[in-house]
Length: 222
Image 1: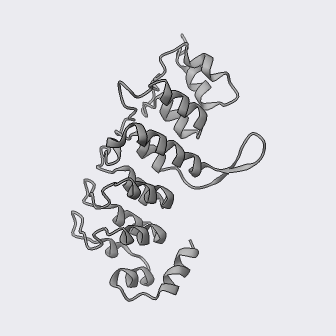
Image 2 (image 1 turned 135 degrees about the vertical axis):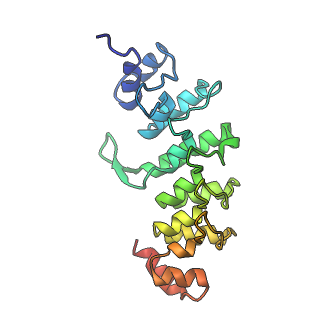
Image 3 (image 1 turned 30 degrees about the vertical axis):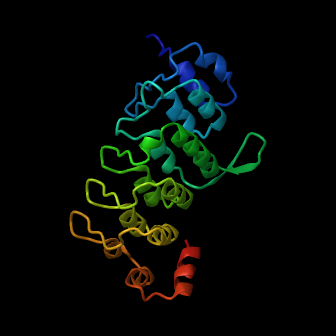
């Protein structure tokens, strides 16, 4: 059986120790994965946090003719918004924050394709929905600063606030409400974000009678 000729490129994208630029110029740079995810080279660079190769591919015009989207219509912005905040050792043994890298890549991508800020996947979720679900405050803040629609519902009628509440991401809840989101918005089943609040402190926050010190304590406990 012949090996997938694009496999070398995928391995070069994922492994920073390989001679990537030489491999990139030997194949179609998009090189979509034959697997169910259909990740392109740019998507793999984003997934592995390889900022240098991500920027290199962008400068080569990787997404100029066709945008990178996986099988569920997730764009690069949506994929990056789901990166969790975790210190990771680099090749020198020093820890770095993968989310900081993801934020920089997302900013790079947005500057080229700003119209994707409110792009939704097959579930109607935007990058802001995903960031709110994961509790990625940095991404939520950046997307709000860039003008993302924080009241946009997904196919179930859930706004980013619904997801932040469901997953107990208090800092994201506070940020979205401070930005002026509709905290009383109801989803397709008639539930508001406060209906998904599991703790009495968060219920009190939505109802306007929570003590700020209680709210801050809840946030620091996450």
